[in-house]
Length: 214
Length: 214
DNA sequence: AGAAAGCAAACGAACGTTAGGTTGTTTTTT
DNA sequence: AAAAAACAACCTAACGTTCGTTTGCTTTCT
Image 1 (cartoon, rainbow over the protein chains, first blue to last red):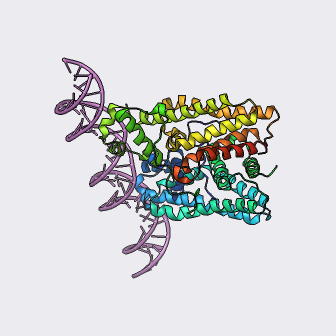
Image 2 (image 1 turned 120 degrees about the horizontal axis):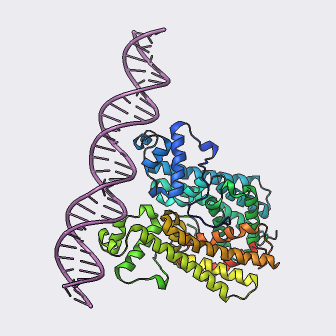
């Protein structure tokens, strides 16, 4: 079957990858990893503590030595996902030359690579945020909006400087953002596509969308 | 808060809209509608038959007069979502003039409008397919792949004819497709954006992505 | 009379989590 | 150095609740 077509799986990736700073020692780290796997593959509501514990090699009751509740596990993963994404977007913008096209390419590349490098984390961060209790979700939503506003600002600045020509500037961020979100669902290392290449291509797509020839 | 930024809700829309041909009489139709609401807002695993029945105004046990199982309800909704999407894509292509740019615009408009017109249905169809048992999912996956291939074919034909200039033709379909999928999450009628306008703008974005000036 | 759609009650299973205990390790005290 | 105490992480068992679904019945309609 040709690649890039949908499969029955929620996402293609099978590795529970986390940013280095988020990796934790011992059972707590294994719990985060296996929780990530089942939250990503099945969704939060269909992932049980018993199944997670079984993958870890302990009993469900033992998880509560490491986490106060199931919701705390989800919150930790979603927070890590959003912080890593924002960190990368900011770093990319900081490191880019100040012309809008270079900035847009850098930011889109960071956005896409965050999803290609940590697909399971990205799926959980993007698709399970609604499952978090309000008090856990509020600070994370703030981080997420900062990422979104960063992209909005880059696009708006390009328009203001006359570099970009966008039919509807309000729609550019959700459209460009959406492309990257979906990468987490279909990208896996055995796809035969280098993440850097995907990121470059999506950055080109983004530039064209805002009216820059490539 | 500025529009288009993420909220805590899984999707913005609050209406359980279904294509006319899929609307059913009596309690069966109400069950489909309220199931759609909770599957879309909470995810399949977090939507209980008791909660669905309560919204309908009957008891959970009564649902089984209309549907063999909870999975059958999900399967019906996901099938309807995919069939409507493919039907619209095919109709749009059929009705378009044969030049690639017009065809791409038509197909992307159909894709986006399917998501803006039936946001809850689109969210369930796209995001809960993994929750279906394999025997229910197989025929629906086939329909989904036909939609994807339709877009692939339109893009490839444009490239073959020299109308499109795409940095990586394999990535064009997932990129363009992804934009439309996400519309279902953020579009609602009170957004202040006409779906036709969104569809037109996304069609322009798609044309630019494949190298057509607009 | 038969069918359809609803009901209450119940079933078997599973859920997230708590409680009390055990074990191994570490720290403190002697 | 050895013993005692404390701690962390695991265990089993259980709790209260919820889950999807079945059963037998009642009511209404055809």
